[in-house]
Length: 190
Image (cartoon, rainbow, N blue to C red):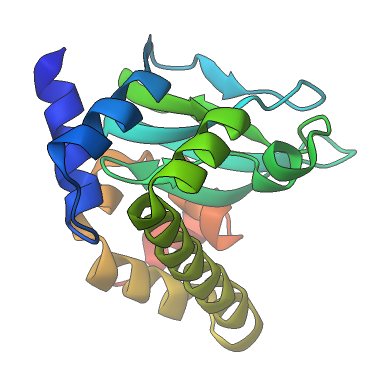
């Protein structure tokens, strides 16, 4: 378990510097969690108590429409942060689902714990600000790609940016992420 906590500290220290005293304050606020493939981190309508940092594994974040169709917002793997951020921030029921594509391990931090850490360790407040900005940039790029690119161009970009991720995701999920059928996906050159 100590090795996982060291990974979390290294993750923070890719962006900010922490003293040992600061780390001793931060670490107890994070809870370790392990889930199997197909188990849920977040389900629609349920409270969202935590933000999750992925130690190992792969998850998908998605919404389900009135017809029961899944609309995948994000895939997240090692060193990604994931949650239903609207529900997490506003303390309302989840509107998205996050479930495991693979057996996965996480660190969870509650909203209250994250706020306490940020108030007491300014470097961590800076870390979360920077991470939020990266998340906003990625979301903006995803929306722009949906508006301006063909599905094949989005697939090529996914292959270019995240080739290892694409190898881990079933083709039907990649097709759903791109908004095409699996048959259409199979015609892409990639």
